[in-house]
Length: 72
Image (cartoon, rainbow, N blue to C red; front, side, top):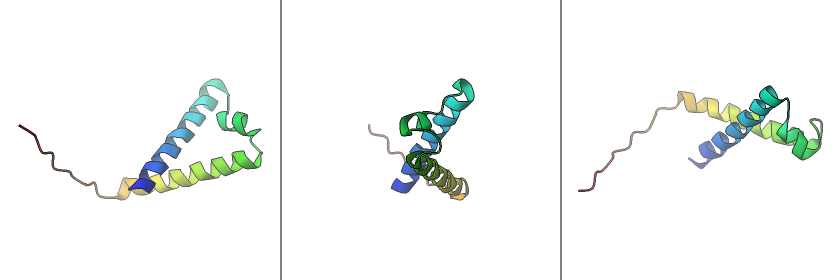
């Protein structure tokens, strides 16, 4: 599902941003958007948070199994 992939990408971006804050004390989103309180930063933080909430649903979904066809 395309929404799952978008949510995963946004969650990874959020994780990388948090990693940069934890390791380097540098907030990439705030740096790009003009500070943590800038409207654009807050929008990005909210979108990433919603993506993280969406990804919680991935934990509870049954996994799809795909049959692998081997070519001779």
